[in-house]
Image (tube, rainbow, N blue to C red):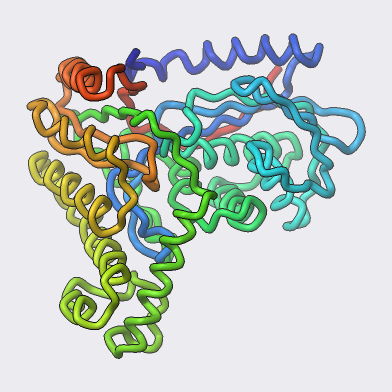
Length: 400
């Protein structure tokens, strides 16, 4: 079943429903909430940890944290979707290798910065599928951080909270990710994409292609796992590629990452780098260029160019960066036969998860039905899928 774009309109009804569930679990009402959206990355994939350019937008599917003050020095957390609970020591959280590490990471980061971490009873609910490439982990971290910030009266701004959550995911959870996910979830703006420079951390809002386009997200059926080594391997390969480029005199001694290389250097890189490292470098260098090309095409309303840029990005992710899967490839190939779809690519880190399809506005139902039927023919079942729109970033509020 497809969730239409209008699903965002019942956010308040969903919050009220979850407030009732909190009462049922803890015997009293929550006093604060933190809510954070997932994201799709339109273009600029696997460039954030090389200090490159990315173009995500927050999407109207959220993770919600409800909380109330508790006695003692422990934090009780119940994840409704997993039907699992955990107790966390506010002063000394310990990794456990599961979903709760993303909550503990926020606690650890707050404490490391000298902030008081109050004892709370919490529930977590989400409309974001885990391990799908829609940034459920960043949304969880931002929602938790927003709830703690409100409960403790810290008054931290959105960018500070994004940095805090990013620190926790890198250092506590142990995933060496860039800032894309946290910035998109924290700083998103309705109707806009965010051009983020991951070196300077400058964020520019870019109107999302007017009213002429929509986004259809299809799950490949393959769950994505970042911490199983493949993501870290790509990070290491990028580091090895820039080191090799310096060694061969292609990069300057002060060049820190592949962000410093330009397309004009690709022939020299192909000549001197070992093939795998060259392909990784070529993806990053050309993907950075595609971010600005995409922004320019949005500004001039060139929908055909947008589709072509997405297709080029998918080919690069498949062939040069090797993070696609047969299922992701198949979904993008199927979309080439759907006239309502302008272009497609995987979204997120790859290794499973979802594909993103840019659809002509007003033809979402047509695209959805044709893609679903194609998946039934190819895979034997209809995929989980969502029609999404760019939305505002994470927020919190006190509850009566």
